[in-house]
Length: 337
Ligand code: ADP
Image 1: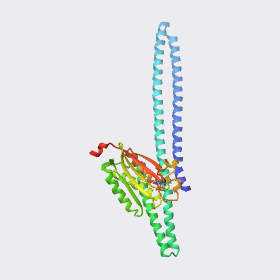
Image 2 (image 1 turned 180 degrees about the vertical axis):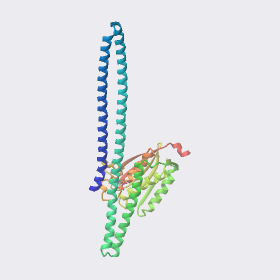
Image 3 (image 1 turned 120 degrees about the vertical axis):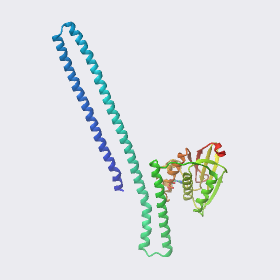
Image 4 (image 1 turned 135 degrees about the horizontal axis):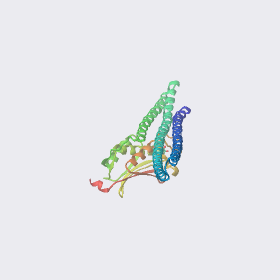
């Protein structure tokens, strides 16, 4: 863990060193600018005073008056020129500093994001790998009977599945972070599609009781792949965080000009203060720390729902459990296209 933290800290040190050198350079340029300006002004004053002396010494009083006026005008012109050039130079310097600072900040934010992400996934990957190793070592070292071997194998397969899911979700989360997960929406009969998906996911959970409450002919523009991920993540959570004998209800209906998709369970429930946090990347509520999960499912669901201009509300189910209610804006006329 310490070496992970070191890796996170090092680029930060390098960046602040570069920023420090940049500011030293800017201060040096600014000081030079004021110093040369001062010298130039001083020299101009001297030239002006000498010229005045010469005019007074070698011209008649009338000529001297005209010449001095001309010299003053020339001086004023020169001042405007110097002030103008100075302002342009300073503006370019300030603009340059602001632009460089902004790009430094952007780079720094990106690097911090990448480091945090790397740090979190390293941590998340370690636990299934450690568990897998333990199962394999147990099988290697001990003289296990058939039932014990079977149990260790089942656990090992569970761990590889968990790793597989984690890799898949991590790749998706990384693509989201890099802005590489565009949506390809299709106009579809969501009612039909949702029934298919629920059947398909349900086949992996033969011992679970699933009830559907799906209104017919609900149409929506949605990316089929995103829909798949949304439904799978919500249903898998509902199964994971509720006892086997409890029912999971998947619903779909029109709600005014919105399409409302919901998944209800009768499980652990989610306390109010956690309801917003659970959509954060890698976040897992304290109440479910003992369960095997990735902390990425709801982050992906949240992204997909927002990418379709939708919203998610988490409610308490009665008497127990949670309801995830997703609303997507649409127009009812969609249904008649
Ligand atoms: P995980 O793989 O840990 O389930 P998610 O992002 O899907 O990751 O969920 C984040 C956290 O939200 C979970 O760890 C759990 O604490 C909480 N959570 C999600 N769905 C439910 C649910 N149906 N019931 C209770 N808690 C839930």
